[in-house]
Length: 345
Image (cartoon, rainbow, N blue to C red; front, side, top):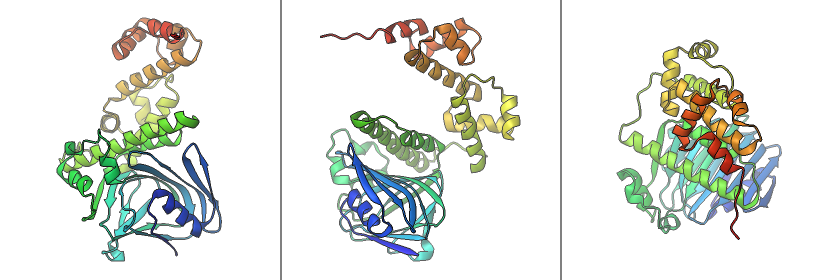
């Protein structure tokens, strides 16, 4: 067991104190910091970005070679932690609780935690387990200075957490699992742009992820989570199918074929798609093809007929009809505008 004590006053300080124990080097590009480590204790990286609206992003993409206990003193830095395990799992307890009281942050689970001032958070990370953990940290006083952060729109429980700027109370919420968050966090990890555009894209996705956490809590708090008979393993299969459709929208999909390939019944497939994507299987396929068509029009020299064939439609007139219904403009009009950029000097 390796114990790491953190008493820093920022996300950057936290990562640097972790570095002192596990080793590695920290590099910075465009305000994004990455700790890269390949030592006897760990392999992988930890990255962090601090934004000027009281929010920071902390992401673990790492495998520890020993069980890790992270002891975090909340005296100097005590943000609200919005945490999501994309891969693996970890555990948490407050300093006032016994070790046997540690709760598991499971894969695909939305978790919100903050300690009281002067308290301690204990994080436990298992050895030899690939961890992909996304943490959005909110410093309440700085966050509330931002005019648009109108927290009185939150439900009562979260409202009290955000307004507790003196950190008088601890709070822990372990939500139901949420695969929509997995998709948003995966998109965050795949941002390939550079410089200012990269940071802006990341910041936008951080907003989306944070709002998804808050919405998840609101639904749970108000008992509005849609009932489902599906197991977590079955929802993972649904997500895998959805990702396959995005990667190859032109393939001739049918409910029968997807049910046969996945091992799920047609009813479970429909239930899973409605729960995760608020669409039936057919609606999701059509939506994905239209988004692919939009991107082909913007980024390729293909004509409309070629695009129709490429995305798996057989009728150009039908494609044009549903494209205009979705985007409010015909494919030809969109192509004409997107191909002729105009500058006013």
